Amino acid sequence: MKNPDPAGIVIREVGLRDGLQSIGQALPTAQKIEWIRVAHAAGLRELEVGSFVPPWLLPQLADTAELVAEAKSLPGLVASVLVPNLKGAQRALDSGADSMLLPLSASHAHSIANLRKTPDAVVEEIAEICRLRDEAGSACLVEVGISTAFGCTIQGRVEPAEVLRLLAAVTAVGVDRVGLADTVGYADPQMVGELFLRARDVVGDKLGCAHFHDTRGLGIANVMAAWQAGVTRFDACLGGIGGCPHAPGASGNVATEDLAYLFASMGQPTGIDFDALLELRGRLAGWLDGETLHGSIARAGLPKTMREALA
Amino acid sequence: MKNPDPAGIVIREVGLRDGLQSIGQALPTAQKIEWIRVAHAAGLRELEVGSFVPPWLLPQLADTAELVAEAKSLPGLVASVLVPNLKGAQRALDSGADSMLLPLSASHAHSIANLRKTPDAVVEEIAEICRLRDEAGSACLVEVGISTAFGCTIQGRVEPAEVLRLLAAVTAVGVDRVGLADTVGYADPQMVGELFLRARDVVGDKLGCAHFHDTRGLGIANVMAAWQAGVTRFDACLGGIGGCPHAPGASGNVATEDLAYLFASMGQPTGIDFDALLELRGRLAGWLDGETLHGSIARAGLPKTMREALA
Image 1 (cartoon, each protein chain N blue to C red):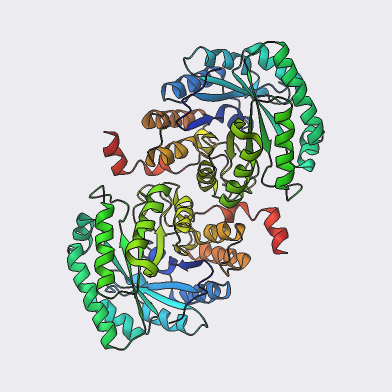
Image 2: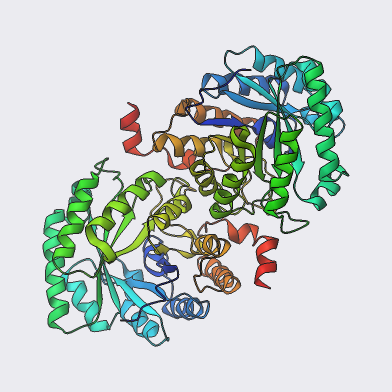
């Protein structure tokens, strides 16, 4: 297991998966490789490079195995992939990925609609994936992300008790890390702080990533609330792409560069070279011509005070 | 003195002043009056309706006295005005405004550039204004907003010690309330929490409004940090207008509707009727045809869970 500095903040760039999966045009593999290399050079140390879903479902992510190989060639970079089922897990193990993320929806309605499985059936499949990983003698980390943890567009309210029950169930079957995701942008800082504190009581130091969408403008405030509750690993997408926004102009995932700015301004190390990250964002804007990029710091620029502190 | 419910959150709508002063086109008085009436009907209880600056300087705010009279005719509405100097204070007293806001820059360079006065010279003028108010036997509240409290585009760093010194100086000369403003969008949640806590040590329950710009995407997170430090009164602009953004597309003030959503989601009463507020935002978009409105909740809509809770 390659583990970034546990004392610092880890921003896991998920744009290559969460961002690109919701964008119609496929980014050529060569540009994805450039993205990976430049992100690594800019100091990012964990990338979700793709998803082992069936290629007919998301053809724009069909090159995931190749991207894992590329990411693994770069020193200190954790190559993470999303895995929807046992078949995908086998492909993840075959690829040599450092970490696989398994989504588990806390909303029964969302789980049925998306996977045609109940949450408990997904927990059983997660148990099988843990066995598969163990039998393979693989060091690949198994991480579960509880989606719709703060509410669901289909079901509406999602009970915190159900989230905590699922967290206990997946830790019992052997997953290494668990995180919470605000899949539809319903969370507020109070919900976030409370649920992450209760999650920590259930899973202890297995508490992993916080994943927020900025759909309703509370993304950064939610990151702060999770951080105050002890979370130090955060998903984000360069340019705030992805996140399935419901309305035209609405933001998707929290923007990597805005998170990097937040923590840098507060003196919390992320290891990220800000100018290099913004340069990559500029390349991405060129590659995704016609797509709206989000985020604030790229438009406004660093404060004079931070520029002076960096110089 | 009309005082909104001290137990709840007060959102002071400053769009009629801070928003309109940075927009080229003048909004007709009739539309401003409509804005005031609809905002009051939507539950807002404090409006900064204009500024008593010389009309040749900001002709779009020349109708401020008329707007004060309109606001004072509505039950429970605090009519607040910005006042740049002694002459403006006299006009504010003549108008019968409930509250006057006096800006005082903590950045020496900003103060010289904007007012051609040092901060200490401004403190002396504030003392004169307090005497003028007292001699007039007026109940008009005198509030000082410390601008550039978190940094300055001209000077760069602003020392917290200087902010605290000025807070002590203005409370010593008799002002009723003091607030802190992040005039250029340099603040982060950590700075905000620390400075407001230290400010409270200096000024106690005279701590007034927090004024944040969303220039770099941290506006809502900064509001949260100030609230956690005990602040319950916040400036905001409908549609996030104003705030002198430096870059094309960059946001200005935090959006009133996003703040209303934040606190409503957390179960903190603001007294605001959300749908009525969004309806007013729609009218504003029509009045300010061609101006970019900001804010997230107006695009994304309330979460299903909140809609159900409101129903």
